[in-house]
Image 1 (cartoon, rainbow, N blue to C red):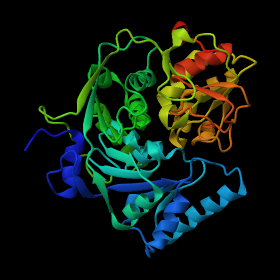
Image 2 (cartoon, one colour):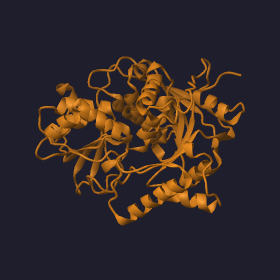
Image 3 (cartoon, helix red, strand yellow):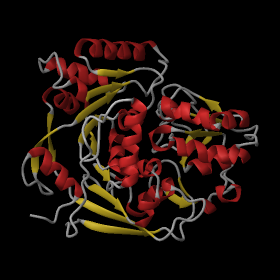
Image 4 (cartoon, helix red, strand yellow):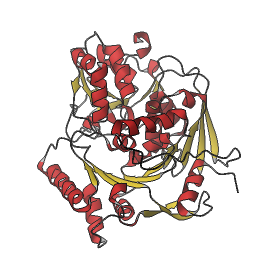
Length: 425
């Protein structure tokens, strides 16, 4: 029987049944992951289940990315616990400096199109850009998946999001997902899957697509899926070549049926879109940049699992190269992974950013969570490429976080105020 969305097809393949939206299924997991903010709870839950091993050490990973290098003794205890768990079970533990979990897993070759992946982190939905149904779960559910290789799900209904028209100069994937958040609201897709499609998506790089899927959770979605195309498959081929080992399995691309049944379709014409900004303290408080231009800013952050990839660093370096960050402004840069850091150095992007006055920190989550690097002072306005801007997100509930594209962050760094990047391109 046809009429299926990408989500319904992936769940059907993983539970050996004709899964439909609304069904409760027990599905086989291809990979499970946790990070240093959630791993301790997962390890304790595994022990509480009476288990001493995971279902397959090659299909589980733990990543230190939120607080690296460790800023306090308590975090060091958690990270030591992760290392011990890895030694005891054979699970791979990514230590300081490896990067953000949501960049490392796609880079690793351990997940491929068609997979079903869970992670003890809400932004696990990032891998949907690679045609993977990936979703965030709590530490206890994550522990259950690590031990059994299975987890229960309610198959979500799907909202189809079509980005039509032509992407204007100076408008990026971050602007697209912010525009969607402004359109449907932070709860507009609660417990739904999103399928992103249209000519604009087809024209984006894999880096740019991951920015969009990463923020699916910011409108409440369980997953943010895209079809696999030649760019997607080339990404995995390159990763296998770089790692010097084959992919864990051949990609199994999944496309929706032509007559797939959607809960609704949202269409956004990008042709007249301008750079977007999410204002404090919610991600759906979105306005065109032109309405906010000139707003004073004290700090900028380029990085995170949303916009810390090579293309993002390249965009910022092109704007900042040969110029200087405003003396009243602080710019922090965190590459999303060690590979990206190395590639950015080889391309000269890191040199350009540092010469302009940026502070480059360890690959990882950096200032995003607010546990260590780059905590703003009370009353300061921050422009960030992150995915969240609620109170306290960067470590100070009295600061104000604005979200925008890497280009907007870079242009704003030159003037210490919110600046339209289009005049710098």
